[in-house]
Image (cartoon, rainbow, N blue to C red; front, side, top):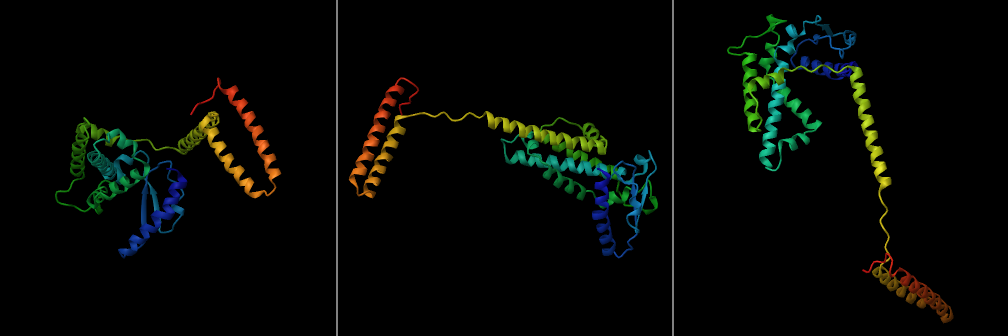
Length: 281
């Protein structure tokens, strides 16, 4: 995430959607946006809209009080993995010849985005309410029998069952390790390097394709008896056409003499090629 992308999201997505939500629920459009100190969050966001107050969390306190780290991200990641595994099982069941490796080869960015959307929709309102327990406990509703951890455990248990359905040997601890793994956010320099690498790869492919086109051998030309017979047949039709066009028989006789001379040269050519690369077809 770059600062430019985040600012675009803030102006064109976040503000319009929150304004609409406030209007639909007849509440004032006064918003508090809490952010961590990730490099992709512009420090000047607080100056972009008078009704949105942006507050950055204290450094090194994100794992302790950031709402999204109190169960929402974990639930989202678990739902994403469960959805993807379910699709893999469905695809391999529908097509017995489709292997799990083939499924992953066909798993493109569009499918990934759709699964991300489905995974986020599956995060419950109860979960989203409970994530505020560490930084705004007074606003957290109490639900009998509700516990973010229990909900997450149930999702993880389903993932283990689905994984075994894909013949993947994994236990609950391995699923927890996979979901708890934190990936470092890419910096602007990392994103630029990835884009440069992508452009370089496309240029290499284009160069390889051009080289292949240049090295492509020209089809071998072969003088065959079949081809000669077809040509002579066309020649007879041509002579008949000329004879019908020209009332001067002397001109036509001269044309016939010219073609006879051509046939004579063709006969000599055939003899020279008899023992050479001449294909009898």
